[in-house]
Image (cartoon, rainbow, N blue to C red; front, side):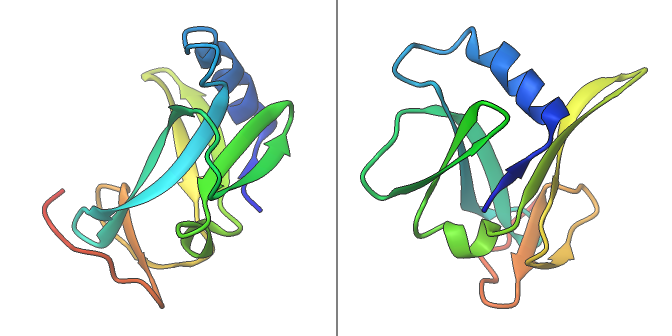
Length: 116
């Protein structure tokens, strides 16, 4: 399962107001890159046949089955500070992350390391 905190769900709902009606799902994805090998992606998308779905605080989260082993147990939060706000991701599967905080690798997937 992928977990959204209540703060993250509220922010996603606000952002969804700008998304097209057929893209009212939060897609979590993993792509190769970054200094540790894998990077997260988030965006609004329509559901596809190969997607797994989870609902958290009224937000439908979708992830492709091929990405799920890498993001299983992921927690997405939203934090606000004096400098602004942003999403934070905690992944129990990550065994290494890079200093910039956007790249990771797991014990079973090293990805394709590149520059941050």
